[in-house]
Image 1: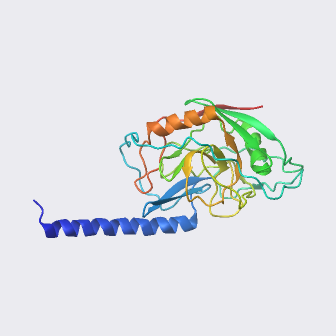
Image 2: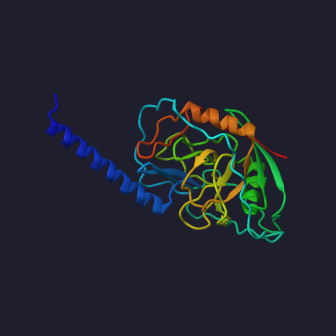
Length: 290
């Protein structure tokens, strides 16, 4: 049986390890790294801050646990949707999008660049992500992020998302599912690095708020680094800075699919941030644009 002194020393070592992890996570937050596109979560004193990123992954990620985490029995998902943000000043219509070839070499599934000329910045487009977990209907809003919408539609029409899997699920802090990496395999230490072979301009603005029902682009800490990866927020998004372009919303039907995926839990969670591939796999079988 451990003595009081031994217990105190063990508790001290545990606290020191927790503080080291928090400091490392704070460094990661400043880098805003991860996947076109990965996600990291920072938990300090009960405040959870998530970083969603893309193109390059997070070099500080450690090996994933070899065993799947049990489904979160106490998972709390808000039922109230978050209203779409509105720009204080409307964008010129049409506008121009500066799509640039990505020279990092992380394009396992290359496609043609979208047409960046005379891009409409008004109107909506209905899209349905057909997946192994169920259909996820989306409404893309050109007024929010015309370049992101233009890119997403172009990729969908080129069948870029077909047979790709959503590689990162978060159930704490930022409750979201991240998708769009054509090279994802379910390994949280490797996924989140693939893209379409080009990047797009940032379209975030100060009025952006994230929460249930919001669809947004992932990016790295570098400016104008978005590509094919995106994340769908089904719940809380406390503390996420307004750095990620919101380009649409998720239907109620789609949110039911995401809720079921979240409640099934995370397979092989990354021990550093708890994110990982969803136990209930979400693999896109097709994307319809209406």
